[in-house]
Length: 416
Ligand code: ATP
Ligand code: MG
Image 1 (cartoon, rainbow, N blue to C red):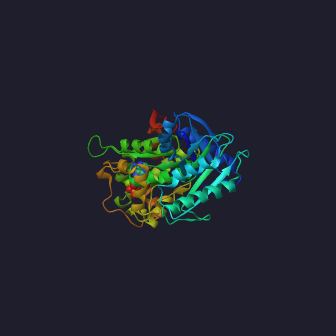
Image 2: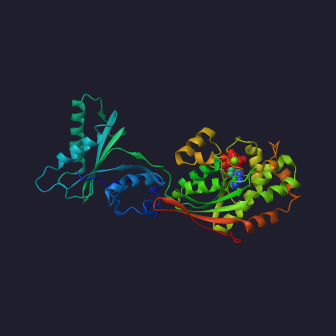
């Protein structure tokens, strides 16, 4: 057996049904190449409904696998055992049966099936014959070991797959779970309000996983003590999230001038809600300039005072673009579990301040109305507050190359 250099990529078939099939497959291939940037690929082939990535140097397979677990659109991955083509006169079944046995003998399962696919019609056995012969061989051997297993062709717990390609023969059964979702950068652009907390980072992940490409907007505060600014948390989060979409912009907006104005001019109970409204307006301006089709927030129903249905409605009433709240029905525990899985949890857990305590509201309103917030905003020059934010924000660009996230450049901009 040769050292394995073949990674099999399975994708959900749902998105293959419509006329977008070619587009999605093209995007998935592109994502595979970008995710594996720096690892030489001999070729990517597509026998039927899967992709096979041939890594030039087998010692890079582990690293490649790690990276591919962050490519959305992949339902699961496998590393195939690779057999040389049998030479004329050899029994091709013998080697296949042996490899299949090696592949499954240490796995635990109650039901199994063998599935074969033959894209090389010159191979002496057809797919059905291979399935029957290898399946029978495995069954006998399992029985001989006293294991209670049966063949189940409809919903097997373990499927041993055999690919007869024009090149080598591939055998694999052990599956590594992929993230699912749709291939990156297939849905269009959105702007995400990224706070530094657990929720908005997870909300961002959920939308990227469905193919959206995000720009991040963070409102930073100076913190109560030097060095406590929230900027470093936002930066680390974007670095952690950028592999899912390969490039990202982070817009950094100074929060304090807005807070100072709101705190001075409006009722204390409305502060948080008015902060949110201004954040939304700034995010929308950025979205409009960058082709964004909506704004994402990490709101979760009832989690904090600003997230009652009344307050969500009162804040959101000024929105012109659709607001996406992918966590609205999720519990904190579910959100934190995803945060751990994608690696944002420990970043969000660090201490930071995006809002100086003097600007926080001590008794926030639970049931505001849009009218009440509109009336409170009459004391503010909302347009110029938004303008100033746009004028003074800074933009940072991030990218994921050679398996690493990096910040590319930062600059001040008046045009967003
Ligand atoms: P998170 O865990 O994302 O901070 P949260 O449950 O703590 O959310 P809030 O702090 O009330 O709730 O924020 C609600 C949403 O408003 C956030 O999920 C985020 O989308 C947005 N948001 C809040 N603060 C900021 C900020 N400083 N910069 C950008 N967006 C923010
Ligand atoms: Mg928060």
